[in-house]
Length: 355
Image (cartoon, rainbow, N blue to C red; front, side, top):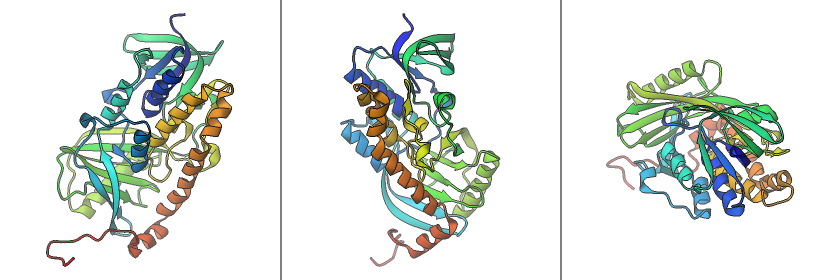
């Protein structure tokens, strides 16, 4: 009975950590296992920006960010660059610049001590009077049993692959870090380049580093990344230099309502594992935390699956709407038309311009 739990959660990112914390508040008598597979060496490739939606969710949870999580500079605008049409526009946005790994670790630190945290990677799951999980740790393989199972393990979720239909639309997110923060590089830029990807990329200054990353088709993703990086350097007239580290992972891009899978029969999905991520911007922190709270509340109901699906209806509809925004932003013709019009863009004043 030592390794038997009421709920086992695979993945300790924003979705898993939030669910574990919220479930303990509502059901403190439950034995909860949280499997944390993230390390400093396999941190999630992410621009590390907290969107207004994510900031709102933190406010709803009454959480305030510690200074150690934040990075410089703070961002009030985004340079949108269309490499195909050679157009750049500035749009007002407000993001909090942060260290994504520190953010995840901070959320994990909020999980009550009564929740058992196991550091390792879940390699195999089977149904057997509940669920049997095999977890590979630095000390070898461990086996755990649980009555219910929650997948909070992202786009490549082992839980989703085994019990539900897999995510149909996936990209490979490739990101590199570069030493130095050239003032000629925008604090934050969103890049579109139809020659190398039908999705978007990002360029962000972060403390004494600069990161460039993007979402690319799974075939030849690294070659497409390098080609786009070269085209961006030519456009900016700045060399990013030699990367100090390269990161990569899968990222999903929902296109249909059926791509959102919440779970049933004792198996539930939260965050990106459920497909709950913006198809237009790949922002997923807000949806991860919201879905974690919704599932925790559903665990107080008799029919967990039904209560959770009902609770996420508005969120799923909102994210489905993002698929239409994506179709506009990622259409070269429509994007060029919008950017050329200058609608909602911010005028950039040069020294000596009259205001």
